[in-house]
Length: 251
Image (cartoon, rainbow, N blue to C red):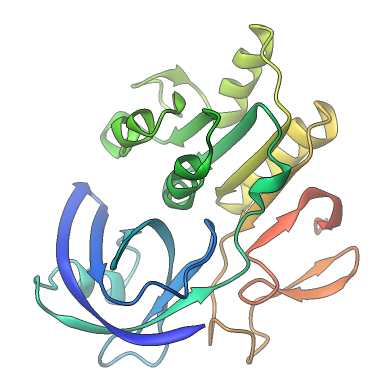
């Protein structure tokens, strides 16, 4: 974990509720896709944890959704503003387990960390992106420019495959496609569905990044603990990425 001052060089709207922010500063603490940063906002006690979408020399890009007062305030931050940021938080994805045909599955604001993951692969991954509707779709072109094969699914059928990421996964299986390992991030119900269909039924092991409300963001407060097959673990410190083999779902 590293703390530093970052300067906003870009802050723009992608969809009605989703924004992209680029921050310039020391990014040496970010060592793996799937990690997150924690941003201090004036007037708010808790920092805002946000997944890393991309890292380039001297800059980090995040994509955030407006969910409350803090993220709403962020939409009005202008370029040149400095922010106190903790970087290099969380464990990130282990890309050494990908195999020849990795599959990436993302939903909503769980999509950004998969972009950097896709960029890190030499072999082009297949990426399933799930949204509620066409007006929420973002970053498809960026994934394709990174060499990924992208399949979009929308719950209302207004773009791509009609249905969920699981419906899109079943379409790929129906075409005879096979996968060696999967990486996913998204809301809890989506992760459970991915676990049931991709890991348990299709027999593909993978790594799952959990979204959770966090207090400190670096393991001190124990506020984001989850049960695993190997005892309680902290999502912010021991995760947010966990392997399918260790996850214990609450009934």
